[in-house]
Length: 109
Image (cartoon, rainbow, N blue to C red; front, side, top):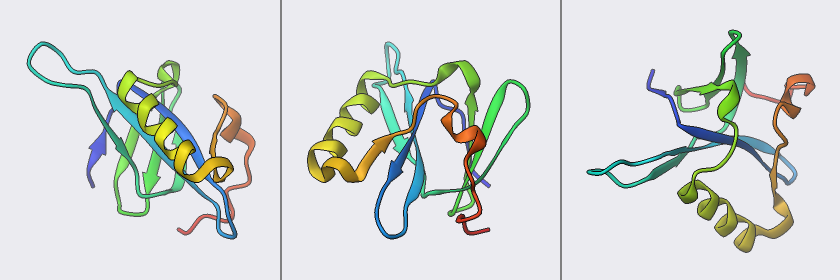
């Protein structure tokens, strides 16, 4: 299992007949590295350990997301805006902590 620990992250919903949730993660670069981003394959389950949300993807990856780091980096914000420009209302930003009480029964295990 590949684990990712982003600096900033958001959960987005791709609407349609078969809606999917995805983690859009961003990392801030430093002096020698540029900023980067990654979007998971689709959330299949999640858990919380008190400090981190753990989102498991359909590809087998895990995103370990610090609870207080919900939000965009400059690069991930740009990616989200590109998705909104291309797909309009089919892409929705999930508000911070809104997924806690969601019915996740639709997810593939």
